[in-house]
Length: 110
Image (cartoon, one colour):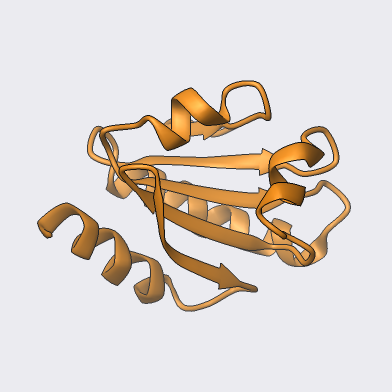
């Protein structure tokens, strides 16, 4: 994993995502997913851009199927943005980076 990119798991999801005081961006992915690989550089950029203010991380759904199943993640890449444990945005596919920055900025400023 790149610097500033968290690794979320079924075991740490409650603490690292739902109980986080900071907004959290979770990229649900799998190693065999081509579009997921295409999204990775953007996720890494976001992690760098918002380091220390937002937790940005990835969750491998093959290794951690429980949370993905609970959230109904049935297509990847799916990116879910949380604020104080609540989902504020859910994005399927590879949107422009501004889709994420707008949501993250709203979380930080609101």
